[in-house]
Length: 114
Length: 115
Image (cartoon, rainbow over all chains, first blue to last red; front, side, top):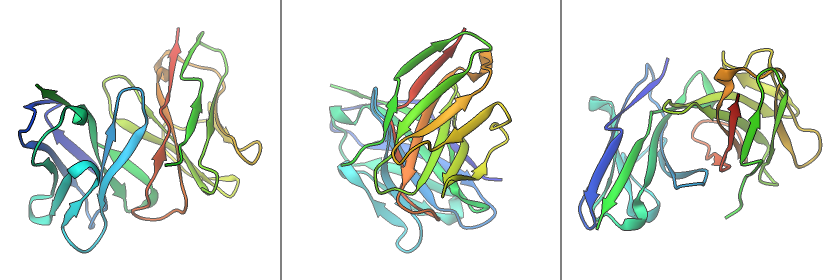
């Protein structure tokens, strides 16, 4: 069975500082990995995804993530935080036994301090 | 960008009552999903739906739950007799095609409170 662990349920950074949100997964087969963002009172929005190919994936709003198989990680980064980045971020992995299912992490609430 | 629309945004019901949560997926999408998030817990998969039938369902999706696409635009989740533990945020999602790595578009959710 798939599982996803997000370290840190709350992360605070100053505006302009590096954002690093951690995600580790467990999977018996090569996974497909996703980061979703949820702004207040909105649905989950796909930031980026890794399926195959280049392990460094660039997404929307300046975010990127790197798939590291040896570390079973897919950490999300952004070089310079903006106030508008404040939201909840979810890492998810596709279930190889079911192409239509996503298994989500517990989420990380990002706060950006002025 | 096209959106998945969910109504109502909040639903309060008494234990044992039936509720229907409604979703309008993106118009050219063919795959539909329901997920839920109990407060403080992870977002969990409930069910996927394609070609007017359930493709897959989780162990959460028991006989109390059903889904339907009653017309060409709506996709509904019915809970037949609600329990306190059904209180959660319910998310509808849709995708253009199915398969690994497919982008899901999520609605903003319906917060269900069972009293």
